Length: 76
Image (cartoon, rainbow, N blue to C red):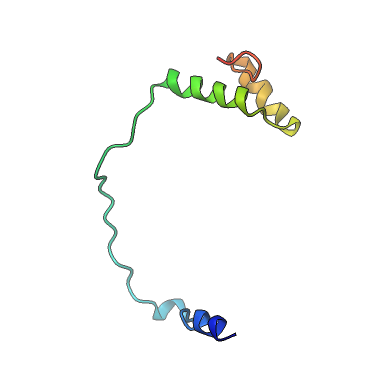
């Protein structure tokens, strides 16, 4: 029980008006994320569908993917 009390003491409730100004966030990226081409995205998506077949409840979404040539059976 002492661990629970110690954990609870880490938190405090206060009215929003009494809140301090949050620290400024730095949103600069140290490195750029890997950029996929559109083709690479859909190839990976198709491979994921093939290797991990989605449940039947996702049939409507899979039918929409099939309209643009993506299927769990055939890939992309």
